[in-house]
Image (cartoon, rainbow, N blue to C red; front, top):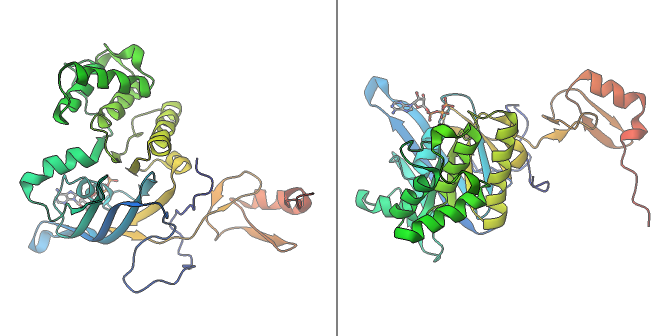
Length: 314
Ligand SMILES: Nc1ncnc2c1ncn2[C@@H]1O[C@H](COP(=O)(O)OP(=O)(O)OP(=O)(O)O)[C@@H](O)[C@H]1O
C-alpha cells in the first residue's frame, strides 16, 4: 500500500477543503508524476428521446504513470461505461481522452477513426475482466501467446513471452493447464498475464476480484499494486470491493455519472479503520480524532494519553 497516498472515499456530504472552479469535477489528490491519460468533459448518453440515459456526465480525470486508481460507486452509476470509453471499447458522446504515448506524442482516442482504434488499444491498454474471459480450449500459455500474437509477437517468441509472464504472476507451474483446471484466483492471474502480453502502459480492470474469495482477492490486489510500482503501469480498477482501497493511490466515488468529491478519510486510532470525518469524534490537547463507533470513542476517552503520539526524542 502506498501510505503517502491521499485517500478519498465515501458518500458523506462533507465540505470541500480546496476551492475549485464551477463545473470542475477533477478530483483532488492527483499525482505530480507524468500524465498518461487526460480525460476532459467525457460524456456518454445511451438511447434517444424518452429512453435517454446519461450514463457518464462531463467527467474530467488525470491519470499518472504508475498510479493505481480505484473507481467505486453504486450499481448503475456509470463505472463500466467510463472504463469502456477509457479503453476505446465504447465511443463517447462527447469529450476527449488523450493518451500520452511512450514517445511523448498525444493522441485523442475519442476523436480517432474507427480503423485506428485496434492499434491504439493494442499499444496502450490491457484489459482484465470479472469473469477472466479466457479460452478454455487453450492452455494458460496459449491464452497468453494468442494475445502476444495480436500484439505482433509471433512463433516461439510469443510462447517465450507467455512463459515469462506466467512466471511473473507466479504461475509457471500451471503453464499447461486449461482454465477449467485452475482455481478462480489462478485464472485471474492468467488473465493479468494475458493483459500484459502487449506490454501496455495502462491496465483497465472491471471488478477483477468479484469472483475471488478474501485471500485470493488480496493476492490479486497485491499483484496489481506490484505492476504499478515495479513497471510504472497506470491501473484503473472499477469495483465494489472495499478491500481494494488498501492498494489504491486514489479512490474516486462515482454517482449519477459524475465523480463526487469527498473529503479525506480519518483513521480511527483504536481499530485503525478508515472513517469519514462526520461521525463520533473527540479532541484532546489539540488532537482531533474520528471514530467508527462510540465504543472506540469511549476507549480513547478513558486513557487518551495512550493514543497521543509522543514527540520524537533526539
Ligand atoms: N448499452 C446500454 N444501453 C442503454 N443503457 C445502458 C447501457 N449500458 C449501461 N446503460 C445504463 O447506463 C447507466 C450506467 O451503467 P454502467 O453499467 O456503466 O454502471 P456501473 O456503475 O458499471 O454499474 P454496476 O456497478 O452495476 O456494474 C445505467 O443506468 C445503465 O442502465
